[in-house]
Image 1 (spheres, rainbow, N blue to C red):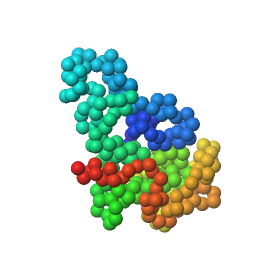
Image 2: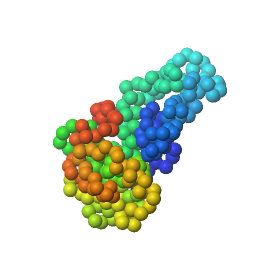
Image 3: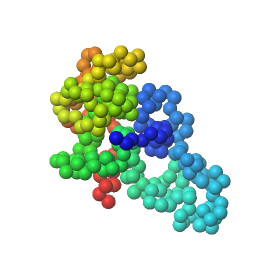
Image 4: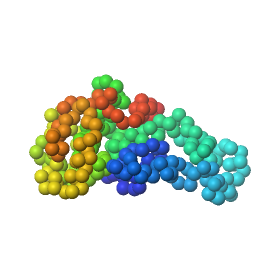
Length: 246
């Protein structure tokens, strides 16, 4: 059950938009609002040259010529820099879209590829199938129900055995839920002031039509399989299909 443990705000800066990985902090004091440039010295205006590292062989004649392996651009994932952002190639655009979706749901590359292969073998549109599989993950459903402040927080609740699925303890965040499955927070976990605050805040969150929340806010049920118009994730899934089909 490996997962990313590094700085979450760095992921948002890298993708250039909020991925909402830190709960309420993403709506208030968000690092992306203060530092919209990509992380690292290469993401700053002027690229590596602004940091004083553009000299020598890397920033000499080859960099001045504007071709080859200049640190200001090139490679498969980008071109020349303008205003701190890379003018990406077609490959880079598709790669960034794939990385954005993968990081939004907290899935590592190998598992994400497995989801894509499964979606490809399902009837219907591959991109929509992929989003549907990610939405049906246990940690995502807990987040959608408002029981957790974010998907990483939902993952923590599951791994610490605070959650039951159909009356049985569950500790695997990647469990794919089916219509009719019931999710609930364990009785001992409902008395935490932190959890109560999140439940109160989550009760005001818009609920997608494929799940329902109990009046007490501590449990919910899957009503059906999510369709594309019921998923508000800001992603162009067709670009991801093109990325894996290259």
